[in-house]
Image 1 (spheres, rainbow, N blue to C red):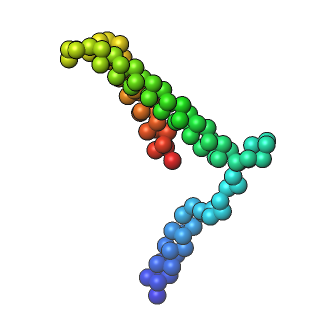
Image 2 (cartoon, rainbow, N blue to C red):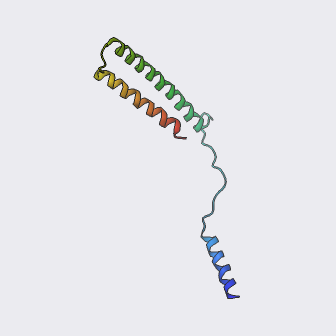
Image 3 (tube, one colour):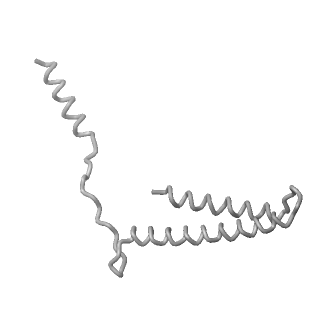
Amino acid sequence: MRRWIWIAGALTLSAQSFPQIDHTKPEPVRLPNGKLQSEEILKSDHEQTLKDLAEIKRLLANLEDELSKNDRHVLSIGAIKKLEDVERLSKKIRSRMTKR
């Protein structure tokens, strides 16, 4: 009998030690204009991604022109700089798209 009382007491204490979980979802944040903040962030990220992609296209077109002018297999420092810029922009795009 004592054993059952001890087990019941232990279960009661362990149930009280667990934190209570609030299963209600928080209210979405709205901006003063009434739009959802999360939607505006997504829209802004999309626009920035399109701008970054346009910049990558421009850099690659310039790089292609520069490489086609040279008949040797030598990269200039400017070409390497453009490639680094393309890499930097692509990493920004990837991190922006995977943060969700």
